[in-house]
Amino acid sequence: MWAYPSAADFAVAESWLGGPMDAARPGAFALRYLAAFGPASADDFKTWAGMADARAVIGDLRPKLKVFTDERGRELYDLPKAPRPSEDEPAPARFLPEFDSLLLAFADRTRIVATEHRPHLATKNLFVPATFLVDGLISGTWRVERKKKAATLVLEPFVPLTKGPRTELTDEGEALLRFIEPDAQTFSVMWPAKRTAARSSQ
Image (cartoon, rainbow, N blue to C red; front, side, top):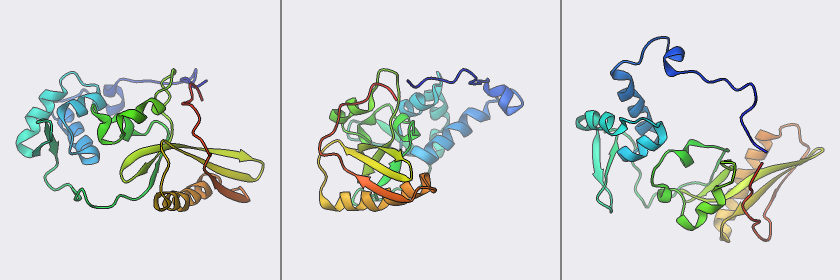
């Protein structure tokens, strides 16, 4: 079962930074967040950062940011010169590792995973599985199985995928597998006939 190792070390930010947090650091923290995950709301930043005054930090930066309004009337913030591809821009297949920040960076996660698929990502011990993206949305989970010199990438989509995404994921997956298991002699990508229930432990 997954858990923190007994030797896990934690430290307050001041000790790692070598000095006290000053007024500028939370703003710089927010700008780095937006550089990675914008456009995002103040609540998204608060969820990711765990800062009680996250909304105030974003509010102070507001004059320097590009501000949008989504379909629900919420304000989204981004860096003025950040790339913002058109919604029609095709998004390549991508594999995300366990506990990837993309899954943890938003208060509203419907922008990256459909509500009906979220139970596949919830486990009793709070484990966040490795996932893959199809057209920018989390569409399944993956894992590596190793038997002697044979490495297999097992892909479990949430719903059946068409030939195009399957081919793209297979090609990307083979490259990933060779990177993760460089000493293996054979490599294969497997698509189980039926998705198994979400795992409760790893």
